[in-house]
Each structure stands twice: as C-alpha cells, then as structure tokens.
Length: 335
Ligand SMILES: Nc1ncnc2c1ncn2[C@@H]1O[C@H](COP(=O)(O)OP(=O)(O)OP(=O)(O)O)[C@@H](O)[C@H]1O
Ligand SMILES: [Mg+2]
Image (cartoon, rainbow, N blue to C red; front, side, top):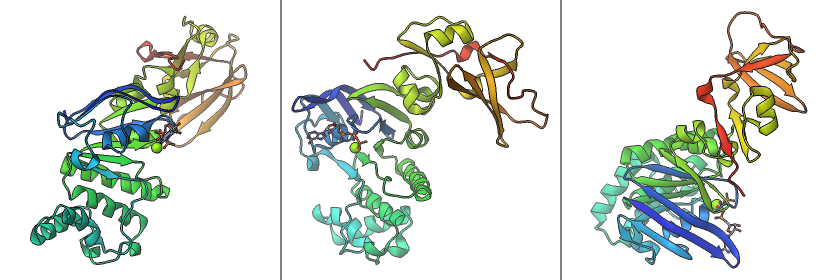
C-alpha cells in the first residue's frame, strides 16, 4: 500500500470534522475525495500531508507509520489551489528549488529539471519569469516543481479552481496524462463531481466527515449505496414511498428512495389516469427529453432521438416502463 488511512478522526473544539475515515491506495492510483463544502476534504488531505494531526487513527505512507512524522519526512508532494510559485524566479529556478534544498549536484538538478519541463511542455519557457506565464502554464510549473522531487505520493487540493472553464478542462486532461505517464500515486480533492468522475481511478464521496462510499467512477455513478451519493453525483429522478408505489408498484419504506436515470424511464401513452402527464417534449439533436409532471414535481425521461415524428404529445397521459435490472433502492444514511 502506498497510503493507508486508518480510523482517522479529527475534532476542532467540539466540532467533529472527520469521523473514522478508512482508505487504502495502491501504487499508481488516482484517487479523489469529493463532497460538499465543509465536509472535511482539506482537513483529511492536510492530515495525510502532516500539516495537521489527527485526534485519533493512523496514517501509513509506503507502509511506514507516518502519523507523527513532519511533512518533510513523508516523501510527498503537494499542489495547492494558489500555485504558491516564487514570483521573482524563472520557471527553471522555481522547478529547481526543491532539489537545491536537497543539495543535489548542479548537473543532476539541471538534468532532472529539463526532463520534467519537457514532460509539462514548458522547455521553451524555462528562462521566463513565472509572472509572465498564463494561468494554465503557471499551473504546469507548480506541477513540475512537485514532480521533480519524485515523491511517493502527490496531493492536490482543488488545483484547478482558479482557472476558467475551458482552461480547467485542458488542465485536468494534462494532470491526468502526466499522472499516468509518471505513475505517481495521487490524492485529489475537489467539490466538482464531474471532475472527480472524469479524472479518477477511484473516488471517496464524503459528507460531514464520513466516507459515504468508495468506488470506481462507474460504481459511484451507477451503483450509489445511499441517497446522499446518488444526489451528490447528479441523479435526478427520486421517488419516495408513495410515488414509488403509485407509479411503479414498488414497495419501499419511508427512509428509502427509488432512483432512475432519465434514460432508464421509457414513457408510453396510456388511456388510464396514471397521474403522470407529459408537459413538454424537447428535441436536442442527440436525444429527446420528456418532462412529465406528477403532482407538483417534474420527472425527466430521455430517449435517443431518431428521424420519426414524436409519437407522444404534450397533454398525453403517460406510464413508464423500465428494465428491472435498473432498479435502484437507496437508503437515506445521512441521519
Ligand atoms: N483550523 C481549524 N480550526 C477550526 N475549524 C476548522 C479548521 N480547519 C477546518 N475547520 C472546520 O472543519 C470543517 C471541514 O473543513 P475543510 O476545510 O476540511 O472542508 P472542505 O471539505 O475542504 O471544504 P471546501 O470544499 O469548502 O474546501 C469545516 O467546518 C471547517 O470550518
Ligand atoms: Mg477544502
């Protein structure tokens, strides 16, 4: 194991911000912590980094109990949200800094820095001051500066949150490419679920200091273990006890919800009074979106578009068919 987080809890005063967190990362994994603001992601990352100490539990890095080691002794690299580059230094000097502290020979430093700059495609910028670079380029310098020290574990805390949307997409592809290329085990903190899904080998979804589920992006997305995970990851159609029975004839209890993706609900016209009424049909090119009312709420259904005319019209009474292998009953574990 590159990283084992064992029974980590942390309190600030009376506030328990981490509650018995357990995680294990194998070599080369890209692992994300995702969850709403204040759920404890940064605190957990800081404990792994040795910038904060747990109230309970242990941290093992490379199978060494590192719980009480300083950051310098942990063989980790950290990429923060603000890149924290040295403004009065060139790109080359910023990247070389960590190696100079380790007192490596000048020639070794030069070789390692040039190699990393090539990987992040900044060779031609190496003599420029970092203040002259774009946001995306600065972000690559901050990555290069950490990678050059060849840490066993790379930690990222929302490194893209200062970038605008298109740069953000570009930078996340870049981080993923470099991470796979170099094979450094990485822990990545974000509150952006689509970023976590797109980048990670595995994800831990956190809420109020607890890990609600750990799994691959596909597991988290298709097989959420509880209502919190489904809701956070972006499921849109939830049905409580009453509506699950009325619409689908399925029995669940008060603490459960039934969930379907829009594409899992196939609308059909019915002459019965189902309580479901088609209120809008939207053609998007790739798909047809159906908005269906049930009482005061809207249910989303989505079918792949084809060239035939819409068989369903607004005002139609609707019933749903679905594939029973898609049946997803979620427990509300928040309380
Ligand atoms: N040094 C501290 N002293 C007291 N409380 C703290 C301290 N650091 C964090 N907290 C509290 O711990 C909780 C978790 O904070 P944390 O920064 O870990 O959340 P986060 O998941 O990273 O949120 P965000 O997505 O907003 O960055 C918050 O309620 C925060 O106020
Ligand atoms: Mg944070």
